[in-house]
Image (cartoon, rainbow, N blue to C red; front, side):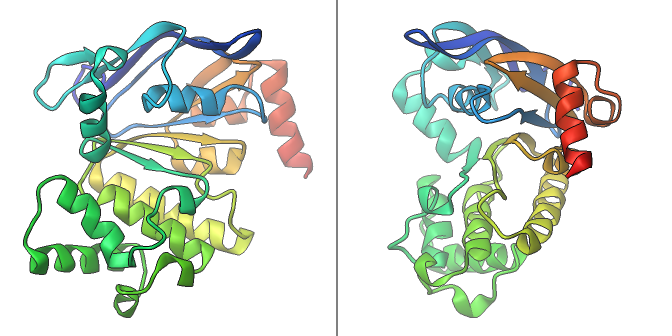
Length: 258
């Protein structure tokens, strides 16, 4: 792990008129590290994720990203074309609802292949072989390669979305409540899959979740947000096993009491 952060966030904030999205958020993220952002609905965690993915522009602060060249750039100073390029190459974004992250009218293999084509792949045989390989990695049977996502179960669609995002070996992956739309019986299997792939590929990831079990299973460090602000941060085990802030203590105790 290099001593230079992959992503360095400095006092980042977003205001929507009188409504506060998030404010004064700062942290560093290193390659191979998974950061969980937890909090109740309306805590600002989704706003933060959309800011970091450069889908909305901040009211204040900056986010410095270390490019593959080694150059550090402020994400919000990049051109639209540069941000789109990062989303196709260096970044992945696993959406809460797989329908928002897939082309529903394109086959399972085509969804994976499109991502490869966006980074220059052109040989049909190689693209299809890579798609087959990744469908296998996410535990989708090879005979489903030509099926549309509409014919897949919710868990399979989410696994397909993961394959689509990871096939280009991004350096940073954003995950927005990646298991919340799934049945409990499917969640554990998907979490195991995500954990294995992130570790195998050495990805950095930011996972937004309201589920502390997801944070514990996937992340090295955790940020707790309330009313748009970071109120506690630290190693995940420390934050969840020995929370210092009353709000974090309440979150943890509510899980234990459930």
